[in-house]
Image 1: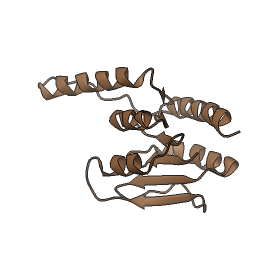
Image 2: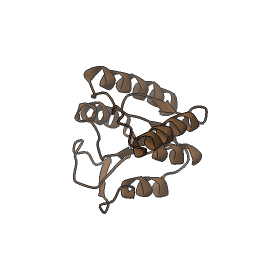
Image 3: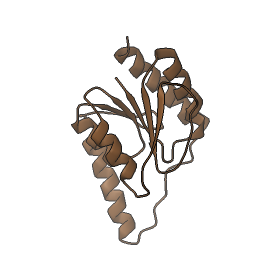
Length: 149
């Protein structure tokens, strides 16, 4: 299993959590973004900078992804692509996307997008907090315990 990180908008609070897991389990990791970001320096981590564009990082990840890989992303359309390729996706707040729930998340995302396009002002996501990092760490640990042993 390889770990892909959608680096655009990746919360700083999650970087040490990810770094420790990469080190502990020797997970090959690819961080993909439109601009330089760093999680830490290890031979196991490869940084890929793609061209500017809304879906460039997503497209790269989807193309490189293999069955069983894990993707860390807050992008629901990317998570849908990941699930359709028999891989796994976890968002920044610890939600594990699956065949059972991804279409519901995608439908809600699309509905909210249509509401915003109609001129309605909606609330954005709540600020990312330490509590969210804790939920992410728990879900990641649970996932890796199941899939990396």
